[in-house]
Image (cartoon, rainbow, N blue to C red; front, side, top):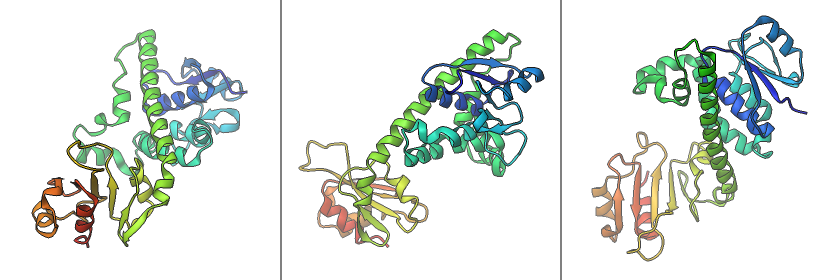
Length: 288
């Protein structure tokens, strides 16, 4: 039986234990009874008590005893990563594919920010406006209050868990949808060694294409409808427009039979939308 109680540290909270708790509450199916403390006696007792989760404290990683700390080894995953490693597939209904997708979309970033893997905090500072503040770790951290009032901080902590739970729920939904649509990707047609065509819209195609680096472009029907167009619209997307940009609008218009069928071409050259498949396929012939 899974524990109904949990111990974590008090003071400032972080995304790793917040997401770890959101995952565990999803697993258990209800809120856990949470104690926030750094009292050595309580922690020592907790790591030997298999009726309680001990998360982000305790200096022990023993999943079989429900202990999920990482501070004893700088190379370990964060608390969120350790909990997801133990229970992610179960939370995803037994789907290893879905668990991997959620890990890539949330857990890995939380891990890296919390443990500063590969000096990622400096990378964020140099390349993201606001640095880590604009990431999920920063959004969770913003729930903290500068206060000595433990009750107020606990209230904020629970708000942060609720926020993380919503984030997790959305990611679980999206991962399940992407996995359900995987057969669309598996039935793809290769138009060129680097161009794939899908028969219907597939939300997660970029996730699957990431495992096949030779694929650079995807031709896919759009979900949005243009009532002035007969049949579906089509789009071509470049996975890496810096390395493999689409032709410019002017180039496409000069080389297709119906230039008026090019509805939109993004100036950044990663996306173009067409009012029929034939025009999209004519542009495919221009791709290197």
